[in-house]
Length: 233
Length: 251
Image 1: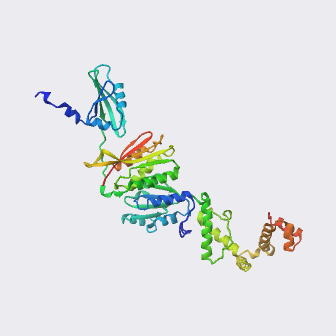
Image 2: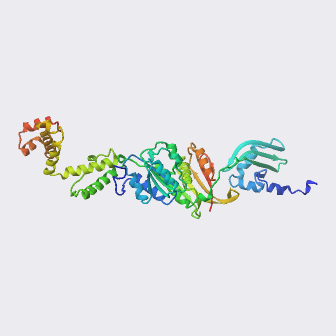
Image 3: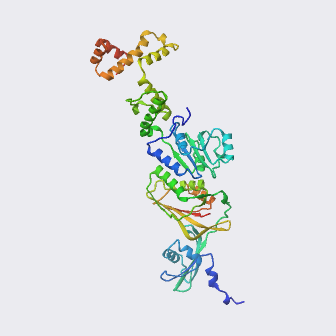
C-alpha cells in the first residue's frame, strides 16, 4: 500500500507530543492539539527563542536532551527541525511519569467549603508570621470532597515556605478545560496558587508527598507554588 | 490542681490568644486536627472547652482509653496531656475533629505529621493585659466563694505571682484578699494556730513578738513616711524606734 493515502496531518494533530511550527519571524503557523495546552503556560516568544537556540546549523533535525518545565508540564527533550527558511518546527517530549500507586478512597473524603479551610490556615499564618497577605478567591467554586485534615496540613506547610517572604499572594480559581484523571475518571481542576518574591524550599519533598497522597498536582517553583486539586463531588 | 480548674469560663484580652480562639472557631465544624501547646495553667483547657463544650475528653496518658476512643470513631475528641502520650503514631485523625492540649512538644516530627493546625499559647508573663483581667476575675470569684466584700480593694500586677501562670495567680489573689480583709480577731486566731505548731512557741517570747513588731513598723513607715512622726503616733521613744527598725532591717 502506498503511503500517499495516509493522513499524516491527522496523526500529528492527535499526537500527545506537542508540535509547533513557526515562520521565520516567530509567528505560529501550526500547533497541534497537545501544543495548544503548552501554549496555555508559556508564550510563543519564549518557545521560539528556545527553538532558535537549539536549531541545527543547517537544514535538518536536532534533538537536545534537557530538563524543562512549564508549570506542571515536564519535558526531558526537544527536537528542532527545518527544511526551508520559511518554517521551523519544535517538538517537546514529555518526561515519563512514575507509576502512581497511591489509592484515594473517595468515600473517606468530606464535602468541604474550601474557602473555610483556606481562611483558617491563612489566619494562623498571619498570626504566626505577621505577613502581608492578599487573597483572591473565585466565589463560584462549589463544595467538593477532600481530606480536610490532609489538605489543611498541606496548606500549612505550603504557607510556611513563605514565612519570611514579603507580600504573599494567594489565589484560588476553577480552571477551564483542564482535568485530573483518578481511576479512569476525569475531574475538573481547582487551582491554588501561592506566590511571593522568594520562599524556602526546605519542606518541598514533604509537600509533594502530601499532595501526591491526595492526588493533588503540585508544581513547586522558586517563587510560586501551584496546586491543582481534583474537584471530586 | 488540674490544668483548667483555675477557670470556670475562658476570657482573654490578649491578641495572640484571641487569634487562637478565632482559629479554633473557624475550624470548629471541620474535620481537622489542632494542637495547642503552652506552659501548664495558661488556660489552654478552658479555651478549648469554650469552643468545643460537647467534645469527648480523654487524657493522653491513658493509652488504652485513647485507642478505644479512636476505634469507636468519636467525631469530636479533646486529648489532654498530649505530651504524656507514649505512642502518637497510633493516632489516625481521618474524618475526626481532634484538639490536643500539650504543655510542651516532645517530638516536633510527630506533631508536624499529625496536626493541621499548631497553636502556641503564650504564658501569662507575655500577657500583661490578661494578668489584670484575671486579677479582677479571681477577686470576683473569691468574693462569691468566701463571702468577702471586695469593694475598694485593688490588687496590682506586681503583687501577684505568675510564675505558675493562672495557678499561682489565683492563689496569690485569694491570699492577698484574705490578708486585706483580716480583722485583729482573725489574726489572733491565725497566730493562735501558728503557736500551736511544733517549735513555734519554743522560739521564745521576744522572737515571737517580732512577728507583731515587724508588721507594725513596716506598715507605719509606709503610711507615715518619717520615723519622727511614727514614733509620735505609736507613742514610743525615737531612739527605741530607730533601734528596732535597724534590728529588723526594715527599709
